[in-house]
Length: 109
Image (cartoon, rainbow, N blue to C red; front, side):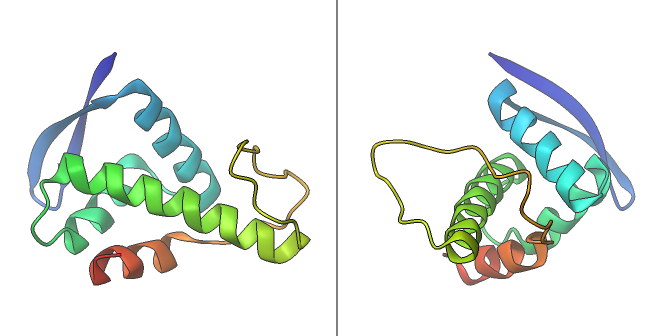
């Protein structure tokens, strides 16, 4: 199922339609990064060379969670498993990953 959200990009009001699972992931990122939706979308918008905003958000969410998994692996020393996904460990210290993620996105990773 998809859902639409209205956002403000600098001086432009627009809407973005994404799958509800992606919106849920964006919501979790907003909480972790202490951002609002407009601020997040403005940051993604500045880095989205060649992507439409909807696709850019999907890619940033994917990179964010891959980076988060990698950081947790580094912190805990746990080996990655290809057979299961684990929820983030709530006991780990919060790390602001969005600057790292947006830098990776800009490079095209």
